[in-house]
Image (cartoon, rainbow, N blue to C red; front, side, top):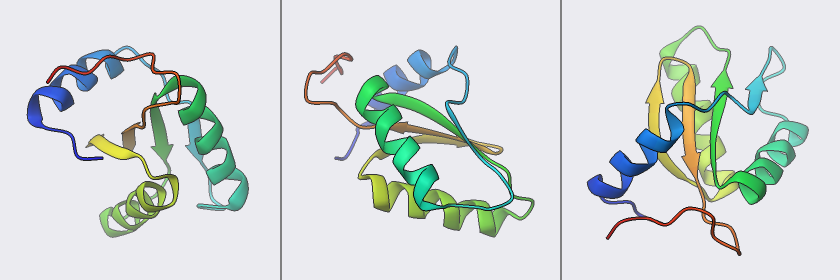
Length: 97
């Protein structure tokens, strides 16, 4: 799903007050972490994931893998926080056009 700039701005505003739901530790991206992200996206639609990696390239690779595996859209990345959006079957968030 591609988001336009207006939709991204709307989601950024909604995500501002959210706390990270999933946090990646030293073990990196495991099946358990992916399952937790799937469950959080299904329940919340808009989540923050905290990636504990020192190098920028590593963070980018992990973020890309999460986006690819979850089928979610990247809203933004700030430092080590990744904001993801994926509409659920019963939508809770209404996006502007």
